[in-house]
Image 1 (cartoon, rainbow, N blue to C red):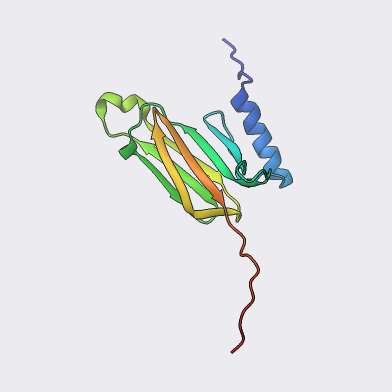
Image 2 (tube, helix red, strand yellow):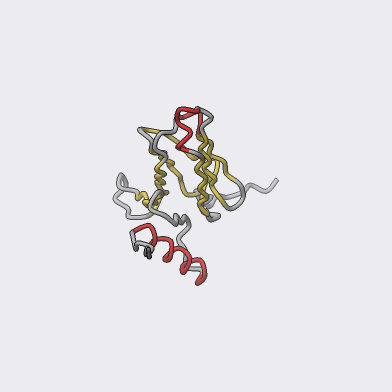
Length: 136
C-alpha cells in the first residue's frame, strides 16, 4: 500500500519557514507549524499603525496549566508540555521552539492557558527617548 504525505497548511508553513530561514528573511517571530500562530499587534489607541508587539498561540489540547512550562533563552521561546497522568498518557509530550529577535522585550511577556490553547502576549522593546544629561 502506498501512502502519500498530505499537503496541508502545516506542511506549507513548514516549507515557508525553512525557506525564510535559509534566505534570512524571517520575521522577528516565526512559527513553523499549524499548531502555532503569530499575529502582530498594532497601536490603535494613538491612531498610529506601528507594531507594538506580537500575540503567539500554541495548541496544547488536554494539558493543564501546571503541566506546561514556558522558558526564554537568548534566541528562543521554549514551550514544553508533559503529563504524568496515566489516564491521559496518550497526550505524551509536546515541545515547541519559536525563534525571537532582539526586538522582543523578554521581561514583559504574558502567558495564559485557556481551553487547551496557550496565549503569549509579547511586547517590543521600547527605544530610549532622547534626553539631556546635565554635566556637573
